[in-house]
Image 1 (tube, rainbow, N blue to C red):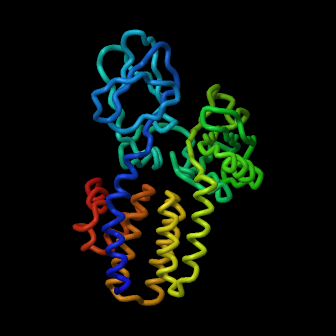
Image 2: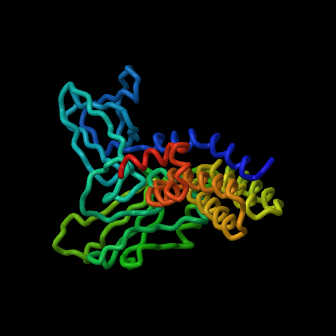
Image 3: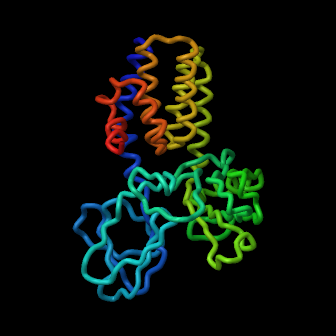
Length: 321
């Protein structure tokens, strides 16, 4: 089978899952409750008690009525909101928690704050690959970084990190995450906060918190074995695509994207035929859409007009223009 046809088939098979994956990201979390609040999950008509710390998804409905005096949620772990008391249901909005606050696909609220670029909300990562990236702000010279088990104890922290660099890596933090992974502790919160002495005028320093997930120790072992098998593929383009699909299988979407973009670059370098380049380009569109890289999606869609009628991401991104 020709490589272009093979990749085109993979694109058709992967597209529904990639589109669906975005709807499975939590849009908000319950940060405090006084009394008893209620929830209806998605289209369900059954009411349930709403616990503190619960993840809220698009189309979930919540209310603070009888027996509830106060309910606060946080959109994308950065936009706090008090839910109005009364018998009416509040519907959770389809905000894009994976994008920057100043240019979101779903229209997240705008506002001043520190913007974490990576990891994204609910992103799966490998502990050895963890790094923190944020949008540098000239007004923020120093930041504090804290990592804790989700709704649990502290794991690691460091104060006074250079905020102008926009990125930070720590072998010590990676080792602690690996240790927790081996103990099957997999969900963590990372908080990036403006250092207190950085802005004495602001009593409540700007911060953002993101929840991320580690793949399990067993999944990481299976991933390693899968990648080792793929290394035997002599064709560099197919090898990169195979690695990308292997990462995608374990929801390591950033790693998957890197491999698919590499495959596309190799296809151009090797002057592959148009069918092959088109097929890999379409796969790259889906991978970029999956990680909310809308600018790159638009670029790739524009490079091949025929793709717009075929791929849903091109249609969705095009509607925003």
